[in-house]
Length: 278
Image (cartoon, rainbow, N blue to C red; front, side):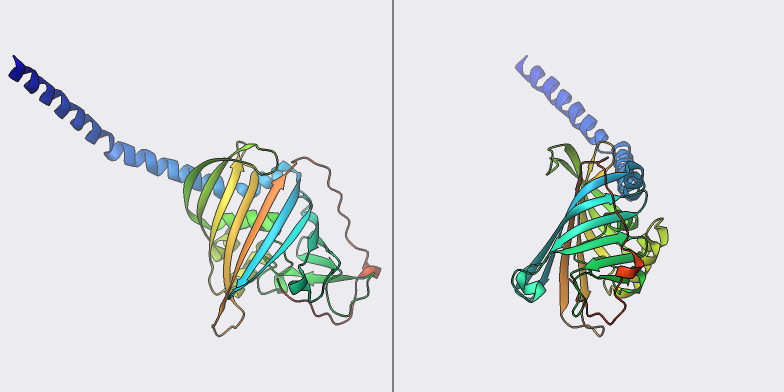
């Protein structure tokens, strides 16, 4: 009888093994592929959800690493995504500004344009500098010291493969968010962009390495809560030492009132300007 029980047990274990093997077969692979496709589609449409969300507050950081030197630039402000207008106050560290106690830089972001106050050698204190973003080698993904949240979201349209990492909590309010990781192609994003195509086209031409690793956190409505891009480019067109730039954007307080006005034409400085990059 003992021998019979062992045989029955062996048969049951064999059936269980067979069922387990069946669970890892084509059906599960197809389900995994469908899940991966959903994750990819969710990340790629982040910009569309952002525009429909209306407005939000934002905090930004831009960290550059050049050899053993690291510099972090921080900003805070708000954006109206429908109007494609935003305003940031950006704080430059002493080694980036070239002096101690440098006044914060005010930035106004508009379609195709970046306005800067307190940034640029020789510019009067009451004047603004206007820069056409499509004329910048990076499309203003990093030049202004912060990445426009809409441009950061549009860049995700170039995602090729996305991995779901897991759940986390939003930094500002503890909202449950989902963490995704992947790599975006700037050229592909530029071809698919709906809102900042000119800037991304400039970036596609200017960046020698167009693959941009990212981590993105989305809430249950698909709204962008945090995104971190890792850019790599060379200051020397012929190659040489590469500059690593990590841009992080945190969005919160969706629906907050955001009032952004473009500087009047009389306040735009028309002389020569020396504006350094991030």
